[in-house]
Length: 71
Image (cartoon, rainbow, N blue to C red):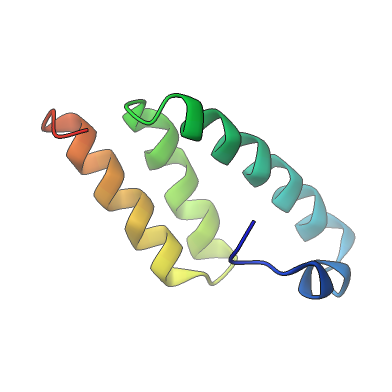
């Protein structure tokens, strides 16, 4: 996950580390199926909670693009 280097992940609490594992899985799924807007939409608030605002915005943009049929 480029937004979270390995060193930074080791400094996170257990709860956030678990969240990052789930985020990694969702991202892998979305790489295979980028037109699944619901996945991007679900991922956006997670990034917001992790204070990764640019990634949250990117997810919302991808979700909107899939709804418009751009992806």
